[in-house]
Image 1 (tube, rainbow, N blue to C red):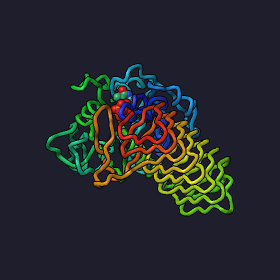
Image 2 (cartoon, rainbow, N blue to C red; image 1 turned 180 degrees about the vertical axis):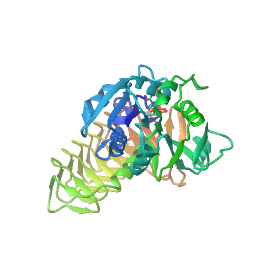
Image 3 (cartoon, rainbow, N blue to C red; image 1 turned 30 degrees about the horizontal axis):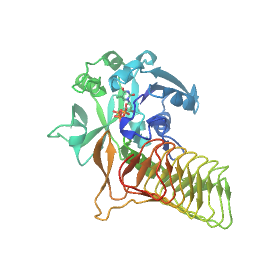
Image 4 (cartoon, helix red, strand yellow; image 1 turned 90 degrees about the vertical axis):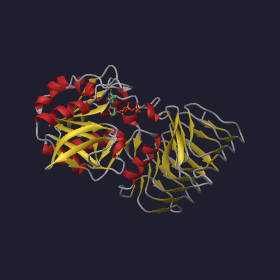
Length: 393
Ligand code: TTP
């Protein structure tokens, strides 16, 4: 079966991280987010991957190339991000026979994608506590009987998890009219398939829709926890590594470093001397973590430098960030309330009691900067020495 992977979105809720790196290419453990989806499709037996690209699409194309893990990859360009049905429609020329559609920004448990392919026509579903926030499936006798977006009175607690196996005929049904929010939505195509076919619900054990920065952190927590420790880099005899720690070839861990895994130290990264890395932490390619720096449960992207005397907790730092000596991140409020973060102009709860900062690419902090929980620093933002930053900038 061919698998269409949607990767053309602008990722506006993921800003500032998605400003120069498209969301599907943001790092989740040892590969980009969308590579986890593509891998799940290939493991389930996809014989071709059709990637729908648009926003910063060349970065996606350069990563996957014409063939990935021995499977041909073709590309369909969606000129305007007019919705998920429109995105699949952009790929329709490449389709024949039954086909799967997966969101390139969702993490699925791979075994379920295997079952999805086998059960075609089928839709992946996940049990959720708050179905009102999702597309919700109705079922009867182990068949899907309906799909409704964000209902006030959900018929079940089965949320649509954005993974579908469609019969060949669905290719003719992709040109659906725009919805109330002005997008051509794949759920309208699913509704037609439900009307005309017996559609199986395939329940996922685990699923994550990675739309906002703290969900990128959660995605890394998920995949870093699955690491098996491996030392291919240069680790000092005077460093202490506990739990599952991967040090890639070309990475250096210097004396006095303590790493409490799961942690992944990527190629070219330098950690230490005397640094402490704990929680699920990703230290990206060519990043530098120096003396007396503690990094906890964070994503440190490629080329970023935290060189001396700093604490970074529950945070996501973009590429080529330079953290001045003595910069500290607060990741907990005195009142223990969940930390909020700004998404498209609104403050929304992250649902996390501990959350630090999100810094876009190229941010520079002055020495002894204090950063408060839930802060959003736009790409290229700077802080002055000794500043306490309480507002986004
Ligand atoms: P969304 O998460 O709805 O959109 P997005 O990724 O652009 O993010 P945001 O809302 O923050 O701007 O998209 C779901 C999936 O579908 C995702 O993998 C991107 C993809 N998509 C397209 O390929 N084309 C589109 O026109 C849209 C709307 C989404």
